[in-house]
Image 1 (tube, rainbow, N blue to C red):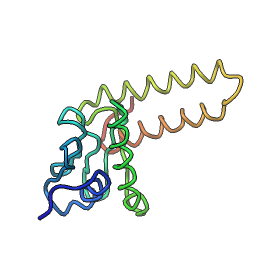
Image 2: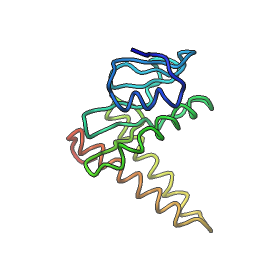
Image 3: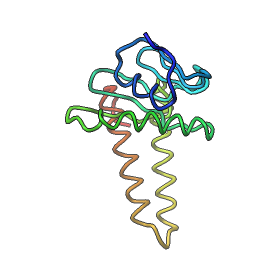
Length: 147
């Protein structure tokens, strides 16, 4: 079984979940089971939670990691086209308190920008709504009490 792929292929193979592991030629992007990483286990980019749900990290790290994240998002396009698919966005994968605080901080940040804005008010309103929806989806999936 092939286990070494180019960056675009590896993300596709990860989404398909037909094999347990794979990596690119340098090992800078790799997956093991449901998780795909950039430059090591310290930066998990995404995790397939179940057949209908994927969780994606909103954290950023470097230009190259951003490129890796782009490959992952592109590979997930067919998944997102399914009517029964769900995407959970979060800063981390295992710290609910930190994730909820992050959503709240982002909402406050965009609300502050909206108050000061002379232009782009609709953009800030949309960003606030997106953060609120992400927090709601996250809390519903993990069955957390209202924040």
